Length: 134
Image (cartoon, rainbow, N blue to C red; front, top):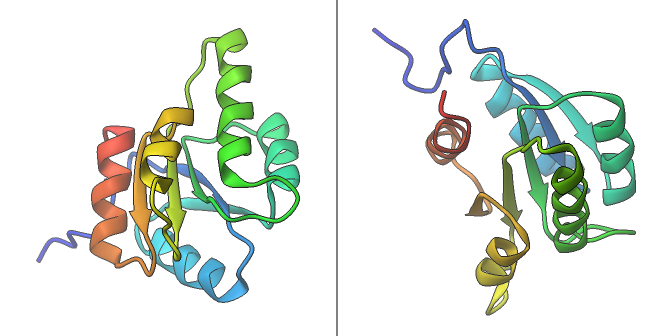
């Protein structure tokens, strides 16, 4: 029986997860590793910027409520850099405590998709395939 949660093996995606909650980090990492993805973690927006400068990622999953540099500011920063480089990294904004206007704000600053936590493996597979074309 085919595992519907897996991304095809020939598409080994490199994903940066920007999340400050250790429990959520473990859950998302487990989901992504089950999908045969390579996972890197950043605890806040500043660490994420350093990792993006150091390594190429196929996708960024980002909490919008982060210490030091929130997700909205981080998405704006990444998109401004991309305007210079002409390279696009899909970004999925995530939050556990959605406030009115969060979805619209995330999309306005350049998120490719938006997920409400807690995530299910099925939601994650669907959005990863959607934004990466895998």
